[in-house]
Image (cartoon, helix red, strand yellow):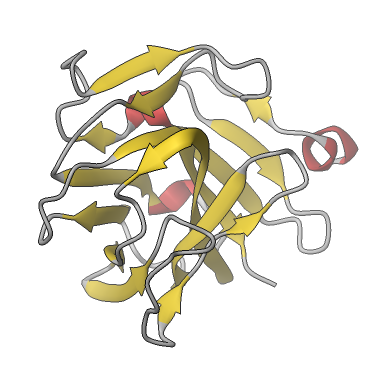
Length: 188
């Protein structure tokens, strides 16, 4: 328990896993490489880079897109039964990031229940947004996190928890996003 609650371990297949110290709930991060990212294999739009402060061998670096769409999933049986969770996009913005200050649509889906919210990747957007737009926060490890949504794993679900972020309405250029992955973490 102490080892798994002290620091994440990489599992075969790519997931990072750890235990929440307070609850003992299982937590995971799905690496960027395992996410469905629109145009991720087109070097003009995305590149794969190695960062020493990432848990994974590769992070996705957004070079340029107009259509930003990132989705992932994890099987509900991997999670702790009866636990509340939140999903967080873990990322950085490089010094020349642009076009990421507009609200995007975030979603979480489990067992036929779909939850949606508006989020913004920029921590200090120049535009004023409605009060219901969720903004990112800085983490202690040098990355930022943006809460995509919350859910409860009742334990009787036998399927995937799906989550994602999309900004496909305003087709402006976007770049400078460096994506480590999406965390599924116990919500205190």
